[in-house]
Image 1 (cartoon, one colour):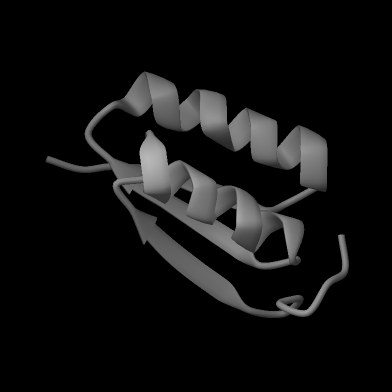
Image 2 (image 1 turned 135 degrees about the horizontal axis):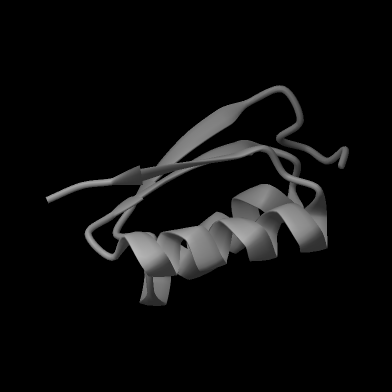
Length: 65
């Protein structure tokens, strides 16, 4: 998807919920490639699927501890 952030990449920490998830949605909506980092791997996978399906975003999942 094209947008003002097309061609950029962002790393979102705490992406599994709250402000992190909202930020990931905004970045993907605006065309950025997004790397999602948080402890909850299952939720990250779920969020990645949402971003890929809704925005056609390129998403990387990085479980962290």
